[in-house]
Image (cartoon, rainbow, N blue to C red; front, side):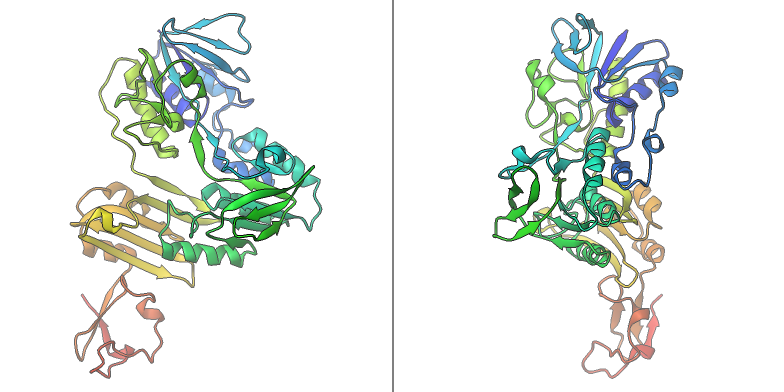
Length: 449
């Protein structure tokens, strides 16, 4: 059997690895327009600031492909799929290439909002960051700027903030412009986002929220941006990190069913026989993901599917991010900020230490762990990951997070750290019991067992 995979990203590469783990005999070929073997995109901002070299973040060197009997075709773009004939064309092959099974792992593209003058300014000081080629162009452009230059990053998501952090370390006056009213809106609640904002501002990075960019200013090169409220920010370089959109062009041109992404079923099969799709490019039950955990989970399912071992169905992936953001540990998983539309019955344990920039929040429903934010302290990460969607003991969680209740010995009033802004130990000695009829102070509160 010959399996062709289009795309050498995390989804495509780990699909190949999982197929090989299940079957040592099938032929596996990967085609990619990239110049390099599989690498982690998370390190791209650090590459721009010269913290790492390209070799540092290439995960699988070429000998890995040889050892796993995987044929890797670098800088060879698939330009056409003929699913009925089970053939593909590339920009280098003299004729069609046949396959028995085809996996489309075309990933995603940076999302560029409809901003006036943006198309004209691309590569003239306006960039997106998605691959090594982009990073090299950005590095080259920054090298031409003087030390007092200004940079604007449009987008306050994970990659946008890390990019801002690294750009700022190159001595560029850096501003982050975010459309939503808080940073990391998909990972943090309002309180933790505000804490992160203050931490970022403390590092000399300007943050502008609820800001919609109307236009890129400049003629021959970028000179700044204009917001829809009329404010102008001067800039010598503008980097747009406003999310991603699935890359579906190849599949759509082949007549494969698409919507926002390539439509797949629970076995990651597309509308065409023996054609599968995986990763950022797919849509399942009207949802797309665009996160590494989803790619990893899907790669296990698709490897079994193409080998006709349909042992597990895809049911979607619980959103999870575990990484460092501006040097601080962050884990965000599941439902971290339940809304009224999601009904009642939620129980939230939280601990906020603004002094040390640490925030821990556990979301429960009927004693079942539904989500969490762990920022600045990932001590509870393994527990939370292992216990997701399982029944847990709230007392055990309180002990793990070091969240306690203190009771007034006079009237019984309780100071619950999970519901208060300040940990009990940080309260001043003059703290008074919240019961207006009680004159007790901090010394009159004892740890509640």
